[in-house]
Length: 183
Image (cartoon, rainbow, N blue to C red; front, side, top):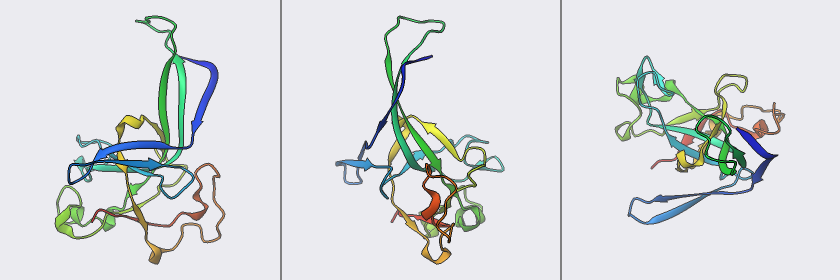
């Protein structure tokens, strides 16, 4: 794969369309420079998938914070090449959240994941930045919609001094935990 003109293009907004509960079309606008930057995707529910605990799927969704929206024009030059025409490839730079297993009542009660019967909000946190899988690139077509996360104010900020590890991930104002607003 060759990147045409050695350029990656940055975008300020991404728009995701979805169907609401009352069968209407709605739009989520994601802007990495505002609090409206969180998205949800379907999790890999196969055994030993991305969100599994002892081989059993524990949650149907993945949550992430969009820290960059990009596109690149690429030319494929490998086997099966059809020509030298550039194709646009869109991608998001994501910082992943992890589900707080200790807070997940469904997992504690033997259910596959937190469900409506638990009457509790799912609690998320950021994994360590140096950890494998904390960041990745995602095809925007895999995003279900934007999501609203509520900071767990009682747990405080993860960096009380306000000094983050990375300017790109904007972690200086992160809270220790977030609740997924699903009700």
